[in-house]
Length: 114
Image 1 (cartoon, rainbow, N blue to C red):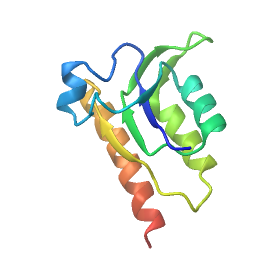
Image 2: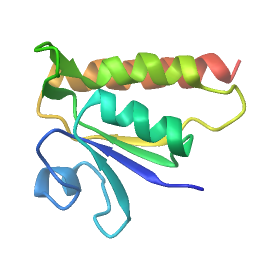
Image 3: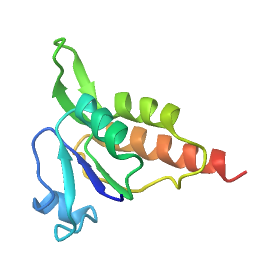
Image 4: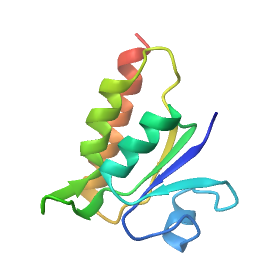
């Protein structure tokens, strides 16, 4: 079953900055607020069609800084080697966080298209 995953600790897909990043708020999104929630959803549902990324996800349950990069490193390790890498958008207001996500995703995509 295909789905779209929206990762952000505060915003929703219909917020102006999310729409400006390319998110279609008319799409149905599964909204998660932490890297832990994102891992649970992917474990239950499999690979999403699209992912919308925020970088900074607040403080986790162990009082540590949570970021999308925690999820992405786990996500890549879970990849089955067959499924397509999801389309993605980045709506983070953290410029270096945006670049980290973009770089990670583009490197991953390049590594499987050898």
